[in-house]
Length: 459
Image (cartoon, rainbow, N blue to C red; front, side):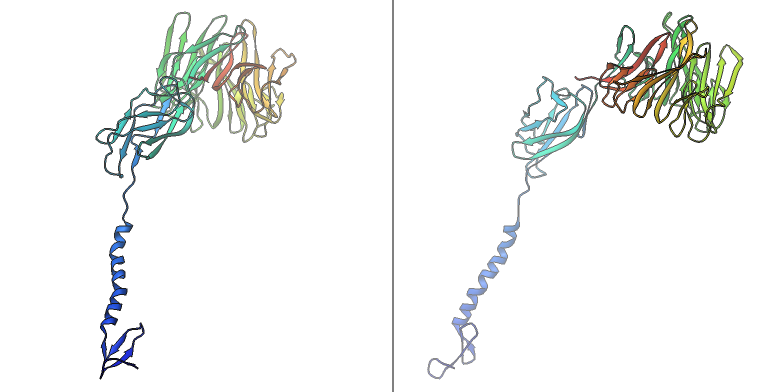
């Protein structure tokens, strides 16, 4: 025990203070206060230390953005705030273009725009940013306050529709907004628009197959079979000699059918129609065309390959014939006039002639006309190699030709035409065009090969 003033006794406390006669000393009270006050002060200050100010924010208001071909991106609107909510006026925003876009003057370096208006917004007007090449990329912006923003941007290819003719190498370029080729002189554009050259035939078309009609003796027409937006089947033709157009709606064809060749349509249930007339059922594949003096379709019904001929001027002339020497069964499909391909990759002519094995793709056609005589031809890929085969009805030895310069992975797109994976379009061994995205070729008149194609062209 400690001794204090006379008559007082002191007891030590744990913190070094003392209790005097059972009372806590002033020293002890003060010492306790010295420890407790900072704790209270610190607790009161913590909310102030934890508070923060929101950072500036920048955003693209109307993205994502799309440019068609070499066209404009449209208005680009950005908005800047000082704290995520308060508009930040009078500031500068710098926009950086990705590869595939350019400014209207052709430059591609970052460009600054100012000032942001009272709402914190700034607009880059349509026409200042243009497409340069096909891309899917990101548009970037940075404000003078350090805020950043990004938005997806897509530039579609700049597509140009063309025809190419062998022999003289004539190229005809069209102005239509083509997306894919649909047959000689016919193209599909955006929204299912079907064009003949630059002439719009119909919109919202679900399927179409174009071809040449007639021959060099009687005159050649351009014709297309198509199905419109209401599911109604049509045929349409144009006579280059008179500029006359003939158009017929085939209301006897059930709605929802698809065109499979000139004047031929196949329904989802397997009904095969020539014009308004049902010619067979259970059909799984069919390729129709106009051949010399008739309209014809090669097709498969219940695994059996067949061909149908008819002279439109004489309905009684119709002939339907099986291919008895060709294997039947599941997976057999028609690939062109008188040609079928089995599920195992065996390519046959209707005569029973085995054309190729390990065939991945094939397109058959009738060649020649009434003047020069008709033969059957097919272009195909056998073991990755591009080839053609020609069969003669007079019994002459068929001719198989290998095209060694056509790259591996190419696809046949018509008689003697192949489309390579890199967009190279080949006529036999010769490169006819580059950067091609779609093509349909064939022999469009006696002895003259032609191809209708769509090319992606640099801006």
